Image (cartoon, rainbow, N blue to C red; front, side, top):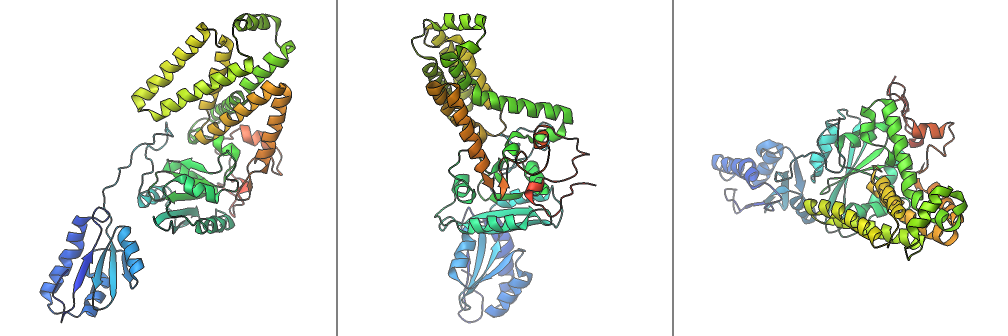
Length: 461
């Protein structure tokens, strides 16, 4: 509380320690107020308020608040409030604490030839990182708050004239419809804005790299940043986007095409290899060459379990080792993952609990799933892999075909803000498979994806 106004007027300065910067408040708010009151004693409160609004306090963002709820909301978001008791109003100045995590290199998405910075937990720093890469007034940022208790800030970012405005409005409508107490994780938002939250397949792109986030915005997609989370969300998406890596654009187009083909091969191996092995070994032995069949019979004759139970047990063991490696501290987790897999696999073979070829099949499938760029996609693939193994154990190749058909039907039914999840395979243009697997040279990639319905289709001349 400060004295010096005319009559019995009082001036109160309020802030929340740790949220607002106490040093900045002392230098930029309290000091100019005290200097003004010493220079002009008994000044009228209305004149002092007008003076502070016009720059008497050294802080650019200033808001006049007449309601207590608005004042409290500003205080919770790092503002300092100058309350005029006689006027029944207050001025709030944005002086947030600078005690935040510094910008560091990405940990989940490694960058070989790209930028080395990553998003942090402060939304204003994240929007600045994006604006450094898209230095254009066309980059728009629409802010809102979510959570009745948390009042978490979110920012919708898009390039005006490139992004589809109907998609932007639909995203804003879905965000406004979220009515929860607090937003503390990505899942709290993802379940409410995706078209099919019951599907295990990812429907939002998660990235911690500002350069990748900005690239999606320029392509015509829409980004979402959440205060307190170092992850950016991008929409709409297709299945093909989860098979791409940002570094593909920094390599020769032939090398990038080869890597894309390798990822799709890994997808097929991770999804179908164990199921095909179970189906052929249990029901369709005539498909196996004679020498390989004799080798499999020799290795399998002392194993007391069926091929299906053997594969399911090893996959569960492999998944347990994976979870243990993720949850433990890094040095211990790496040791458990590597040594545990070696010891369990070798011990299972020596104890004749599992055959060597089953270990090879499970290990190959697990490594193939690790090569997928998206962890969320890898989790969905592992889930359907288990379903295919069970179907193969029951019905052989017929079960694999049934689950495959159900999987394709499910993917064909998915949409992401009006964009088909299986595009470009299911759009009206010719050569969808070619565009899915082959990356053209940058000089020939002149148009944006038509599935995004962008007003400006041309990327370059």
